[in-house]
Image (cartoon, rainbow, N blue to C red; front, side):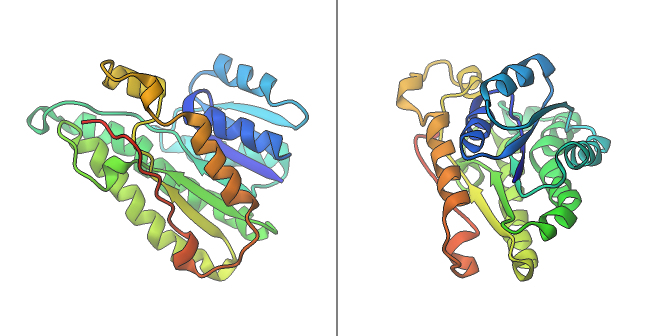
Length: 233
């Protein structure tokens, strides 16, 4: 079984990748820092791992990531869209360039990764897609207008995607955490004690549950999973 994980060099993506490795999944690790990806690959012992250095803000990277995964590992059974970039600042200060940059990674990349991976997911005996969103996508938080918009859009896409691929037996989930103790959150809210936040390993535990559960419930039972903890304003 093969899992493609974006944002895998650190934080939530890294924790999810290592949890999948413990489950025996071969891994395609996607991120912008190859050295960091290679360190994660070293920790994921006992499985095949390929680091893929890619900037998902570039539209052409999506097809390259999928092609490299399939060529090296033979297919895709699990797709984890975890890569994301933050935004903080008043709505009045947002520029079109900032809007485009955030949406390119947080929304456009997951959308087209799902599209490119779909032919391979259809061939899998146990296909799963998990999109990592944020509680900010459901609740409005001041100074995060673009980030919230991008995550809200991701949630909307995930709901539609889940219904469209249900006939193929592809299970689709959305995890929307509150504040998670990652480098991104620390930069945005240095005043918050990381010990009070959700830990990345907790999100990985949810992913473990989702990929190992054997139930064949209805779409409404599994297409969206929301994990709301401490959010940040």
